[in-house]
Image 1 (cartoon, rainbow, N blue to C red):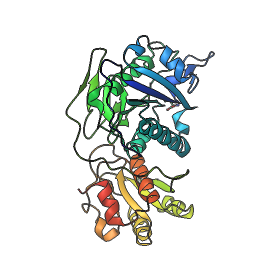
Image 2: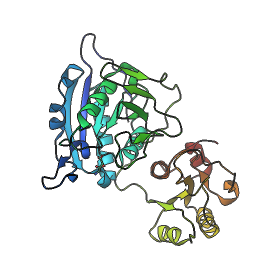
Image 3: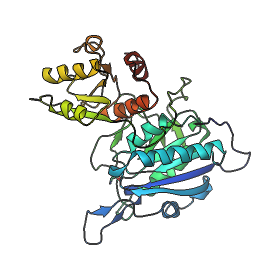
Length: 339
Ligand code: DGL
Protein backbone atom coordinates (compact mmCIF):
# COMPACT_ATOMS: atom_id res chain seq x y z
CA UNK A 1 0.00 0.00 0.00
CA UNK A 2 1.35 3.47 -0.83
CA UNK A 3 3.07 5.51 1.87
CA UNK A 4 2.24 9.22 2.02
CA UNK A 5 3.76 12.26 3.68
CA UNK A 6 1.30 15.15 3.41
CA UNK A 7 0.98 17.47 6.45
CA UNK A 8 -2.00 19.49 7.65
CA UNK A 9 -2.23 22.90 5.94
CA UNK A 10 -1.38 25.77 8.36
CA UNK A 11 -4.51 26.95 10.21
CA UNK A 12 -6.66 24.14 8.79
CA UNK A 13 -8.24 21.40 10.85
CA UNK A 14 -6.88 17.87 10.28
CA UNK A 15 -9.00 15.83 7.87
CA UNK A 16 -10.27 12.59 9.41
CA UNK A 17 -12.31 9.95 7.63
CA UNK A 18 -14.48 7.74 9.82
CA UNK A 19 -15.00 4.22 8.45
CA UNK A 20 -17.89 2.51 10.26
CA UNK A 21 -18.16 -1.29 10.49
CA UNK A 22 -20.84 -1.77 13.22
CA UNK A 23 -20.42 -3.09 16.75
CA UNK A 24 -21.87 -2.00 20.06
CA UNK A 25 -20.77 1.58 19.46
CA UNK A 26 -23.47 1.50 16.79
CA UNK A 27 -25.73 -0.64 18.94
CA UNK A 28 -29.22 0.14 20.16
CA UNK A 29 -31.10 -1.37 23.08
CA UNK A 30 -33.83 -3.89 22.42
CA UNK A 31 -37.09 -2.28 23.58
CA UNK A 32 -38.26 -5.24 25.67
CA UNK A 33 -34.99 -6.00 27.46
CA UNK A 34 -33.09 -4.34 30.33
CA UNK A 35 -29.74 -5.58 29.10
CA UNK A 36 -30.31 -6.77 25.53
CA UNK A 37 -29.21 -4.75 22.54
CA UNK A 38 -28.40 -5.24 18.89
CA UNK A 39 -25.01 -4.20 17.50
CA UNK A 40 -24.66 -2.40 14.18
CA UNK A 41 -27.86 -0.30 14.16
CA UNK A 42 -26.65 3.32 14.02
CA UNK A 43 -24.86 4.73 10.94
CA UNK A 44 -21.47 6.45 10.76
CA UNK A 45 -23.23 9.82 10.52
CA UNK A 46 -25.40 8.98 13.56
CA UNK A 47 -22.22 8.33 15.54
CA UNK A 48 -20.72 11.66 14.49
CA UNK A 49 -23.94 13.54 15.26
CA UNK A 50 -23.93 12.09 18.80
CA UNK A 51 -20.63 13.85 19.65
CA UNK A 52 -21.09 17.62 20.04
CA UNK A 53 -18.08 19.65 18.87
CA UNK A 54 -16.41 16.82 16.95
CA UNK A 55 -16.25 19.13 13.94
CA UNK A 56 -14.12 21.52 15.99
CA UNK A 57 -11.40 18.87 16.29
CA UNK A 58 -11.26 17.74 12.66
CA UNK A 59 -12.93 18.05 9.28
CA UNK A 60 -14.85 14.79 9.05
CA UNK A 61 -15.96 12.44 6.28
CA UNK A 62 -18.11 9.36 7.05
CA UNK A 63 -18.07 6.07 5.11
CA UNK A 64 -20.20 3.03 5.97
CA UNK A 65 -18.07 -0.06 5.25
CA UNK A 66 -20.40 -2.56 6.96
CA UNK A 67 -22.79 -2.65 9.93
CA UNK A 68 -22.15 -5.93 11.74
CA UNK A 69 -21.39 -7.21 15.20
CA UNK A 70 -17.65 -7.83 15.22
CA UNK A 71 -18.18 -11.47 16.19
CA UNK A 72 -19.11 -11.67 12.47
CA UNK A 73 -16.04 -9.75 11.28
CA UNK A 74 -14.59 -11.44 8.22
CA UNK A 75 -11.79 -11.40 5.65
CA UNK A 76 -13.83 -9.52 3.05
CA UNK A 77 -14.53 -6.60 5.38
CA UNK A 78 -10.83 -6.58 6.26
CA UNK A 79 -9.91 -6.33 2.57
CA UNK A 80 -12.55 -3.64 2.01
CA UNK A 81 -11.10 -1.62 4.93
CA UNK A 82 -7.52 -2.08 3.68
CA UNK A 83 -8.36 -0.98 0.13
CA UNK A 84 -10.41 2.00 1.34
CA UNK A 85 -7.63 3.18 3.67
CA UNK A 86 -5.10 2.78 0.85
CA UNK A 87 -7.34 4.81 -1.50
CA UNK A 88 -7.78 7.54 1.14
CA UNK A 89 -4.07 7.85 1.96
CA UNK A 90 -2.75 7.37 -1.58
CA UNK A 91 -5.08 10.12 -2.75
CA UNK A 92 -4.23 12.40 0.22
CA UNK A 93 -7.96 12.53 1.02
CA UNK A 94 -7.39 12.59 4.80
CA UNK A 95 -4.69 13.05 7.45
CA UNK A 96 -5.93 10.09 9.49
CA UNK A 97 -8.58 7.40 9.63
CA UNK A 98 -10.84 6.27 12.49
CA UNK A 99 -12.53 2.86 12.22
CA UNK A 100 -15.58 2.28 14.43
CA UNK A 101 -15.78 -1.42 15.28
CA UNK A 102 -17.19 -3.99 17.70
CA UNK A 103 -14.90 -4.72 20.64
CA UNK A 104 -15.01 -8.53 20.35
CA UNK A 105 -12.54 -8.70 17.45
CA UNK A 106 -11.22 -5.11 17.36
CA UNK A 107 -7.75 -6.35 18.36
CA UNK A 108 -7.66 -8.67 15.34
CA UNK A 109 -8.75 -6.05 12.82
CA UNK A 110 -6.23 -3.61 14.32
CA UNK A 111 -3.45 -6.20 14.01
CA UNK A 112 -4.42 -7.00 10.41
CA UNK A 113 -4.49 -3.32 9.37
CA UNK A 114 -1.22 -2.68 11.23
CA UNK A 115 0.38 -5.22 8.89
CA UNK A 116 -1.13 -4.11 5.55
CA UNK A 117 -1.32 -0.29 5.79
CA UNK A 118 2.10 1.02 4.72
CA UNK A 119 1.31 4.73 5.22
CA UNK A 120 2.68 6.38 8.36
CA UNK A 121 -0.61 8.27 8.79
CA UNK A 122 -2.64 7.21 11.86
CA UNK A 123 -5.32 4.53 11.78
CA UNK A 124 -7.30 4.45 15.03
CA UNK A 125 -9.89 1.77 15.86
CA UNK A 126 -12.59 2.58 18.41
CA UNK A 127 -15.53 0.77 19.95
CA UNK A 128 -17.64 0.85 23.06
CA UNK A 129 -18.74 -1.54 25.76
CA UNK A 130 -22.23 -0.04 26.10
CA UNK A 131 -24.73 0.59 23.30
CA UNK A 132 -25.59 4.14 22.24
CA UNK A 133 -28.92 3.93 24.11
CA UNK A 134 -27.40 2.77 27.44
CA UNK A 135 -27.13 4.78 30.67
CA UNK A 136 -23.60 6.36 30.56
CA UNK A 137 -22.96 5.12 27.02
CA UNK A 138 -19.18 5.19 26.46
CA UNK A 139 -19.30 5.37 22.65
CA UNK A 140 -19.49 9.15 22.13
CA UNK A 141 -16.57 9.86 24.49
CA UNK A 142 -14.54 7.05 22.92
CA UNK A 143 -15.24 8.35 19.41
CA UNK A 144 -14.18 11.86 20.43
CA UNK A 145 -10.95 10.44 21.91
CA UNK A 146 -10.26 8.44 18.76
CA UNK A 147 -10.68 11.49 16.52
CA UNK A 148 -8.45 13.51 18.85
CA UNK A 149 -5.71 10.87 18.59
CA UNK A 150 -6.03 10.47 14.80
CA UNK A 151 -5.89 14.27 14.43
CA UNK A 152 -2.80 14.63 16.62
CA UNK A 153 0.53 15.15 14.84
CA UNK A 154 2.25 12.87 17.38
CA UNK A 155 0.11 9.95 16.15
CA UNK A 156 2.05 9.55 12.89
CA UNK A 157 4.39 6.62 12.55
CA UNK A 158 2.75 4.58 15.33
CA UNK A 159 0.90 2.14 13.11
CA UNK A 160 -2.66 1.11 13.90
CA UNK A 161 -3.96 1.95 17.38
CA UNK A 162 -7.00 1.09 19.51
CA UNK A 163 -8.53 3.83 21.67
CA UNK A 164 -11.17 3.21 24.35
CA UNK A 165 -11.71 4.41 27.93
CA UNK A 166 -9.22 7.33 27.61
CA UNK A 167 -6.41 4.89 26.76
CA UNK A 168 -4.31 4.46 23.60
CA UNK A 169 -3.07 0.95 22.77
CA UNK A 170 -0.76 -0.33 20.05
CA UNK A 171 -2.13 -3.03 17.74
CA UNK A 172 0.47 -5.67 18.62
CA UNK A 173 -0.27 -6.05 22.32
CA UNK A 174 -3.82 -4.79 22.92
CA UNK A 175 -6.38 -7.40 23.99
CA UNK A 176 -9.87 -7.55 25.45
CA UNK A 177 -9.47 -8.82 29.02
CA UNK A 178 -12.99 -8.57 30.50
CA UNK A 179 -16.33 -9.58 29.02
CA UNK A 180 -18.30 -6.48 30.01
CA UNK A 181 -16.29 -3.76 31.83
CA UNK A 182 -15.50 -0.43 30.15
CA UNK A 183 -11.85 -0.78 31.22
CA UNK A 184 -11.60 -4.15 29.44
CA UNK A 185 -8.73 -3.31 27.04
CA UNK A 186 -5.20 -3.91 28.29
CA UNK A 187 -1.75 -4.27 26.74
CA UNK A 188 -0.45 -6.97 29.08
CA UNK A 189 3.16 -7.15 27.87
CA UNK A 190 4.03 -3.57 26.98
CA UNK A 191 1.35 -1.38 28.58
CA UNK A 192 -0.64 1.36 26.82
CA UNK A 193 1.22 3.74 24.47
CA UNK A 194 -0.66 6.79 25.70
CA UNK A 195 -3.69 8.41 27.24
CA UNK A 196 -6.24 10.93 26.03
CA UNK A 197 -8.74 13.23 27.74
CA UNK A 198 -10.85 16.19 26.67
CA UNK A 199 -7.81 18.46 27.01
CA UNK A 200 -4.95 16.58 25.41
CA UNK A 201 -3.41 13.50 23.79
CA UNK A 202 -0.38 12.25 25.72
CA UNK A 203 1.83 9.54 24.22
CA UNK A 204 4.12 7.70 26.65
CA UNK A 205 7.10 8.10 24.33
CA UNK A 206 8.18 8.87 20.76
CA UNK A 207 7.06 6.76 17.82
CA UNK A 208 9.47 3.90 17.19
CA UNK A 209 12.04 4.33 14.44
CA UNK A 210 11.88 0.58 13.75
CA UNK A 211 10.23 -0.14 10.36
CA UNK A 212 6.85 -1.82 10.74
CA UNK A 213 6.51 -5.33 9.23
CA UNK A 214 3.93 -4.95 6.43
CA UNK A 215 2.64 -7.20 3.65
CA UNK A 216 0.82 -6.62 0.34
CA UNK A 217 -2.96 -6.62 0.84
CA UNK A 218 -4.03 -10.24 0.18
CA UNK A 219 -5.53 -10.61 -3.28
CA UNK A 220 -8.86 -12.07 -2.24
CA UNK A 221 -10.91 -13.51 0.62
CA UNK A 222 -10.70 -15.89 2.32
CA UNK A 223 -7.16 -15.61 3.64
CA UNK A 224 -5.13 -18.86 3.80
CA UNK A 225 -6.62 -21.47 6.13
CA UNK A 226 -4.97 -21.35 9.56
CA UNK A 227 -6.60 -22.98 12.59
CA UNK A 228 -6.07 -22.46 16.31
CA UNK A 229 -5.79 -25.55 18.53
CA UNK A 230 -6.78 -24.81 22.14
CA UNK A 231 -4.78 -26.80 24.68
CA UNK A 232 -6.30 -28.26 27.89
CA UNK A 233 -5.72 -31.07 30.41
CA UNK A 234 -6.42 -34.57 29.13
CA UNK A 235 -6.00 -33.57 25.48
CA UNK A 236 -5.51 -35.85 22.50
CA UNK A 237 -4.61 -34.92 18.91
CA UNK A 238 -8.21 -34.71 17.65
CA UNK A 239 -8.13 -30.93 17.08
CA UNK A 240 -4.89 -31.25 15.10
CA UNK A 241 -6.32 -34.06 12.98
CA UNK A 242 -9.47 -32.02 12.34
CA UNK A 243 -7.46 -28.95 11.31
CA UNK A 244 -5.35 -30.96 8.89
CA UNK A 245 -8.42 -32.80 7.63
CA UNK A 246 -9.99 -29.44 6.74
CA UNK A 247 -6.93 -28.33 4.79
CA UNK A 248 -5.16 -26.09 7.31
CA UNK A 249 -1.91 -24.73 5.86
CA UNK A 250 -0.94 -23.42 9.29
CA UNK A 251 -1.79 -24.30 12.90
CA UNK A 252 -1.45 -22.05 15.93
CA UNK A 253 -1.25 -23.79 19.30
CA UNK A 254 -2.99 -21.87 22.10
CA UNK A 255 -0.83 -23.81 24.49
CA UNK A 256 -0.87 -24.12 28.26
CA UNK A 257 1.87 -22.26 30.11
CA UNK A 258 4.94 -21.52 28.02
CA UNK A 259 3.28 -22.72 24.80
CA UNK A 260 3.20 -26.36 25.88
CA UNK A 261 0.64 -29.16 25.35
CA UNK A 262 0.10 -32.89 25.83
CA UNK A 263 2.65 -35.24 24.23
CA UNK A 264 0.25 -36.73 21.65
CA UNK A 265 -0.46 -33.21 20.47
CA UNK A 266 3.24 -32.28 20.38
CA UNK A 267 3.89 -35.38 18.26
CA UNK A 268 1.02 -34.60 15.88
CA UNK A 269 2.08 -30.95 15.50
CA UNK A 270 5.70 -31.91 14.87
CA UNK A 271 4.67 -34.48 12.27
CA UNK A 272 2.56 -31.81 10.54
CA UNK A 273 5.44 -29.33 10.65
CA UNK A 274 7.73 -31.88 9.06
CA UNK A 275 5.18 -32.30 6.27
CA UNK A 276 5.30 -28.56 5.55
CA UNK A 277 2.42 -27.24 7.68
CA UNK A 278 3.51 -24.08 9.49
CA UNK A 279 3.08 -24.63 13.25
CA UNK A 280 3.33 -21.71 15.71
CA UNK A 281 3.40 -22.13 19.48
CA UNK A 282 1.44 -19.40 21.26
CA UNK A 283 -0.16 -19.55 24.72
CA UNK A 284 -3.67 -19.33 26.21
CA UNK A 285 -2.11 -17.65 29.26
CA UNK A 286 -2.60 -14.08 28.05
CA UNK A 287 0.70 -12.42 28.99
CA UNK A 288 4.41 -13.13 28.80
CA UNK A 289 6.42 -14.58 25.94
CA UNK A 290 6.62 -18.17 24.64
CA UNK A 291 10.33 -18.89 24.90
CA UNK A 292 11.87 -20.64 21.89
CA UNK A 293 13.60 -23.97 22.59
CA UNK A 294 12.75 -23.89 26.33
CA UNK A 295 10.25 -26.53 27.57
CA UNK A 296 9.80 -27.64 23.94
CA UNK A 297 12.66 -27.71 21.42
CA UNK A 298 11.36 -25.81 18.40
CA UNK A 299 14.50 -26.60 16.42
CA UNK A 300 13.85 -30.35 16.77
CA UNK A 301 10.04 -30.10 16.37
CA UNK A 302 10.19 -27.77 13.35
CA UNK A 303 7.88 -25.29 15.09
CA UNK A 304 7.90 -21.50 15.49
CA UNK A 305 7.57 -19.59 18.74
CA UNK A 306 4.99 -16.76 18.75
CA UNK A 307 6.94 -14.99 21.50
CA UNK A 308 4.50 -12.43 22.99
CA UNK A 309 1.81 -12.65 20.31
CA UNK A 310 -1.54 -14.11 21.38
CA UNK A 311 -3.13 -17.00 19.43
CA UNK A 312 -5.64 -14.88 17.47
CA UNK A 313 -2.95 -12.45 16.27
CA UNK A 314 -0.48 -15.29 15.60
CA UNK A 315 -3.10 -16.76 13.27
CA UNK A 316 -3.39 -13.47 11.35
CA UNK A 317 0.38 -13.08 11.00
CA UNK A 318 0.63 -16.66 9.74
CA UNK A 319 -2.17 -15.99 7.22
CA UNK A 320 -0.35 -12.89 5.92
CA UNK A 321 2.94 -14.78 5.63
CA UNK A 322 1.24 -17.62 3.74
CA UNK A 323 -0.61 -15.12 1.56
CA UNK A 324 2.75 -13.56 0.66
CA UNK A 325 4.24 -16.98 -0.16
CA UNK A 326 6.56 -17.05 2.88
CA UNK A 327 6.69 -20.63 4.16
CA UNK A 328 10.33 -21.04 5.21
CA UNK A 329 10.29 -21.76 8.97
CA UNK A 330 13.31 -19.55 9.67
CA UNK A 331 11.72 -16.61 7.83
CA UNK A 332 8.43 -17.20 9.64
CA UNK A 333 10.24 -17.18 12.99
CA UNK A 334 11.96 -13.94 11.94
CA UNK A 335 8.54 -12.38 11.32
CA UNK A 336 7.41 -13.36 14.84
CA UNK A 337 10.70 -12.12 16.27
CA UNK A 338 13.86 -13.68 17.59
CA UNK A 339 13.56 -14.51 21.29
N1 DGL B 1 -21.40 -7.83 19.32
C1 DGL B 1 -20.14 -7.48 19.95
C2 DGL B 1 -19.24 -6.79 18.91
O1 DGL B 1 -19.78 -6.18 17.98
C3 DGL B 1 -20.40 -6.57 21.10
C4 DGL B 1 -19.16 -6.09 21.73
C5 DGL B 1 -18.93 -4.61 21.46
O2 DGL B 1 -18.95 -4.10 20.32
O3 DGL B 1 -18.59 -3.96 22.45
O4 DGL B 1 -18.01 -6.86 19.05
